[in-house]
Length: 290
Image 1 (spheres, rainbow, N blue to C red):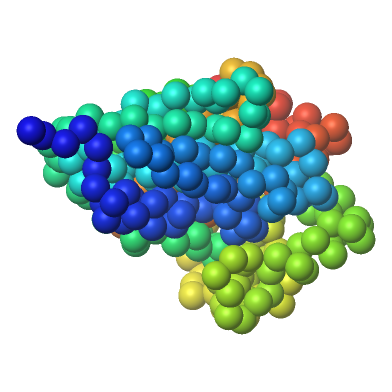
Image 2 (image 1 turned 180 degrees about the horizontal axis):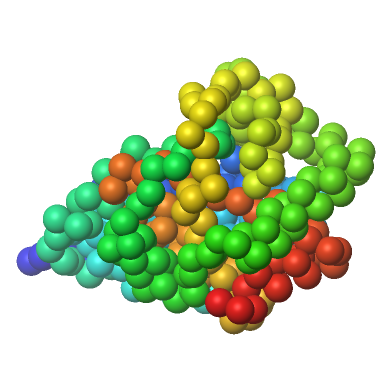
């Protein structure tokens, strides 16, 4: 009789890949629990960033990325997943319960799970290497298929407004001692399995990239830098608790699709963290015409 649930080793392997998902400041704010026939994802609020993420938005987006990584890993091992989101209304930390059914992995699924192992956040400035419109359309479709809107940020005035929103967010963050203390606690480490390692951060020369503490990474390219590097915006029609993990799932899909074609990526969230201030309103202005 065929099994209706992956074996213990398959679940552990899928979870090992799931926790490779990107998370805000690499806080990894998730907990996993394994039942007899189900797997459960919980938000770990002890890892919330009170200064950068006061309303848990980035935490839930991060958990959504891990949720998608787990689904991709399970698919590649021959298990389709049925995801019950927020299955227990009395427990808001319980984000998802997974049930399984046997399936046959496709070549695309196998490529996606390989991308999990290859993906890295690259905070260096982008170069002028352009992605074809056909490949860009594939990346956008990957994000849209996960239930969030995925749009290309065009050049010209729209991109200028976006850059200004990030510059304003950086200015506000620089002037906030509590934010800087929190950033220092989660970055600049030399040997760490959590937080942002010093070896992975660069002194910010790109206005879109957050500057972490104690950066040791140097720019690989000092010329031929971008005004054309691709920028994609993942957004949802609402900002409720269900939409935030959905945005994370779409972000994961976009990052893995880009990795599969050999492109490096860097999630950018700093301007969205200023909940009531100018950067958030400016970001909304960028979204509106899309």
